[in-house]
Amino acid sequence: MALPRIAVTMGDPAGIGPEICLRMLAEPSVIDRCVPVIFGDVGVLKRVAQTVGLPLEAVAHTSPTFGGDSAQLPYRTIRADEWSSAWISINEPAIFDLRAIDADAVQPGTVDQASGLASYRYIEAAIAAALAGEVDAVCTGPINKAALNAAGVHYAGHTEIFTARTAADRACMMLTCDELTCSFVTTHVGYRDVPGLLNVERVREVIELSHDAMMRLRGWPPSLIVCGLNPHAGENGLFGNQEEERIILPAIKAARQQGINVEGPLPPDTAFLPARRRDTDCFVCMYHDQGHIPLKALAFDVAVNITLGLPIIRTSVDHGTALDIAWQGKAKMTSLIEAMSLAARLAS
Image 1 (cartoon, rainbow, N blue to C red):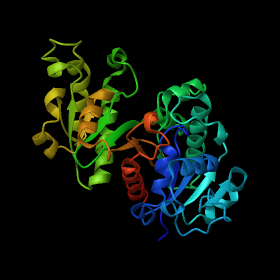
Image 2: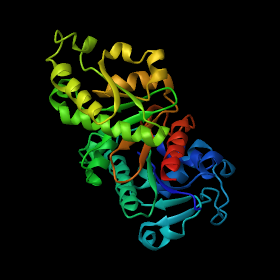
Image 3: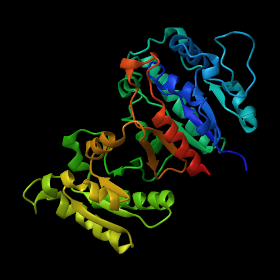
């Protein structure tokens, strides 16, 4: 059986995405399970390899090298005009060279609209390839939201891009690691906007998406906990605007009627205690930091982001562009390795 082919978007060229992509290509645990194809810019990857001081042996695989230039990467490179005929024959690590940015103009560690636009082009191409069945999954590198918006691409993040570009009827973000799994009713919005975005149907659909995802990942009916929005889960209406009573509890009751094992709403400050984490497969969170803080405190380097509800498989690193250490040889690829491994598992 052929290994799944996974599109890996390079992320923002000025961030750590190019470096972790290079290091990932040499990781046996990845290339033994899938065929990674970097959707990015060869010129940027070459420049990063030189700047970071990665010897070719550190980023080499079994593909033949192209000439004797020490800056040349030893992988098959596919130009944009070659993709339509070349993708079907990819059976080892490769680079889809989109030439979305002038490599010499990239300023590592800076927020720049050209880098933001390039990162979006990588995502667009990867989504198109997945929808066409040319790759089996997409794994995304980190993007910079400020750079993306400076380029006129007004999405709050990857989740919103993938939802729109795949025309998904419903979708949500899930973060997962061995210690903890969280899904999110809202994501990249300000706190004052969260209550207005909550309704019974939205909470219910995130419970359903989370249940279906954990069934697939775990292989058994999962146990879910739904967090309240307010301190003490509203304290019987004392805090907030009765979001727990009006919205969250009815959604939970509706999910239970479908046979889903779900509890809540629980006070967010005690929901993630060790005893509950041991017995819970997924926590449904109302807003971004409610789940991101405990998960990143427990497993920052190994957590994986999944977008649920899409017609394609999409996983991602669970960290940003780390501009402060970009192109310095300090970036860790552990989250990317976990994301690739999970993408391969889902695609298989």
